[in-house]
Length: 265
Image (cartoon, rainbow, N blue to C red; front, side):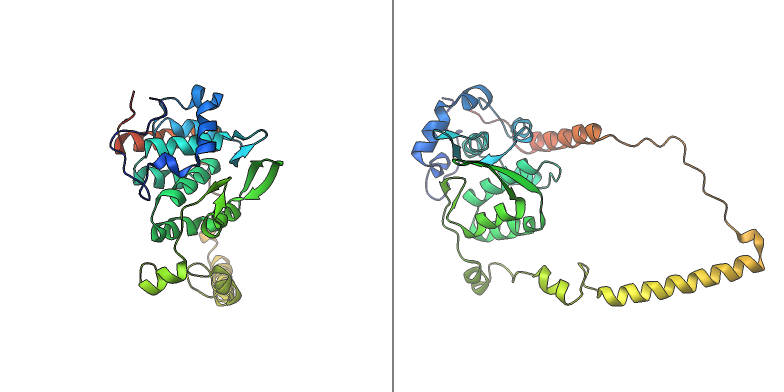
């Protein structure tokens, strides 16, 4: 029963969600020790801890052995979490492998228009990812991985479902035109739509005018001179471990409140 899809799961692309992974790789996953020891009875909440422990992405390696990334992907296909939970996975900026796992699942299960809307913002993520395949370990980046999900037919040694071209979706009015950050950079525009050159020159002139006004005012009235601001007592900076634990707790609470455990015993 551990290899059975949850009761009430919706068909994805007209078939069982687990069948999106090829039969050979799926059987290898069922026989792997990681699947039997760590993926048993995982839920949308507990799978977060396993995703954070990932050290690489990939499909199979060595003698057709599945990676931990592929095992967790099959587990997501088996438990079929809610869409809101997957969005929370993508918003976990500090956990890049959790984001990569969610991006892979969204590419395989969502509609084409939703895939472009959700995954294209991840092209701004340039963090490094470790990729494991038959040749060993190699280095890739988050934006390259997402771009392969949007343009390639295969990713992590599995065949991806057919994705409608973006041009067709734009002609049908399903999605809007893609905004080019490169074009904005060449035109000197920042993210907020303002020209950088004008803003810099304007801010520079304003700062010079303000500094001159301050100097003249302090010379005329010495009482206006500011004393150094005291250090605020009681300020405690959060350590990385504390921020990590608090963020994990927030994702757990959100996933717990969105979707109950629907695993089949």
